[in-house]
Length: 344
Image 1 (cartoon, rainbow, N blue to C red):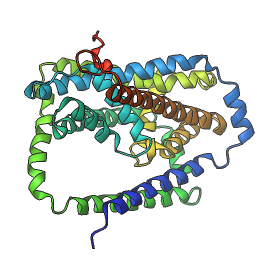
Image 2 (cartoon, rainbow, N blue to C red; image 1 turned 90 degrees about the horizontal axis):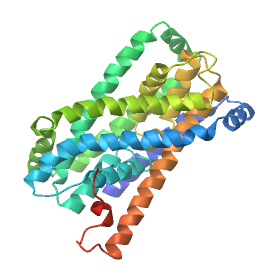
Image 3 (cartoon, rainbow, N blue to C red; image 1 turned 90 degrees about the vertical axis):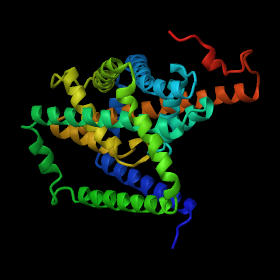
Image 4 (cartoon, helix red, strand yellow; image 1 turned 60 degrees about the vertical axis):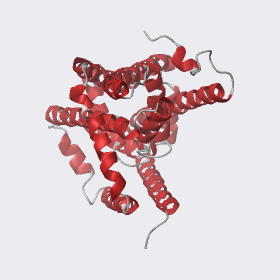
């Protein structure tokens, strides 16, 4: 029996949101709300502009890396594409991810493909290459983190033991079940499309090959290094903002370790990593760094909430701006004003 596409999508979103709600509940249960609000009020919010600045710069660096690969596809299609157009698509992608898990990559490729008439499958191939590179960095970072914190990980194992926290095993089962259902539905959705998949896959590989076809391979390396360095800074600044770095002398490298651990939560198919990011980040802060639950919760809630607001606001403004240009006045060259700004 074939399940309608709308039903498949609805089922996936219900599973995703339900998992997020469950993980948020597990993350916040037992937290003293009074102490939590006291921690929030005592934070030095003067650090927020720096957090926003670092976030934008990190995504601009990501865009520069993506541009090095997209340029190869653009040359084959005789299209001109600016870094600003790609940056707009990246921010739209982050916005979409907070509503529809794993849909951000599709959204950013759709945005560029529709505006510049570039192969969607080719663009998706470049994004897949990006994700693989980032996964390798994350894997390496987790290995280094595990080695440096090896003497503390027994605390987490004690916390997640069955007698102490059976909900962890329930969540694991729910996650596996959601993954099985999702993959099963996706497989069913692809049935009957074999004739089209060959061409799509061929174009996808063309996009993936841009990693070694681009003449800007050095750019792929330095942008990856700088981008992940900034991600670590994004994780460390809130530690300073809430004063969590003082009592146990947390350094930037501790912030980097927390970022790598928190990134695991973002891989769970929940809207924007909601719940899963909170759960694993709070667990790491309380177990590995012995930070009180109110401080750890304030850190996780702020970091995730700030990114949510920033991405929704930025992505929404870009869409409004582009829609107004499309249906309102056009520039004298027939392109959106966003593309007419001269690049640096």
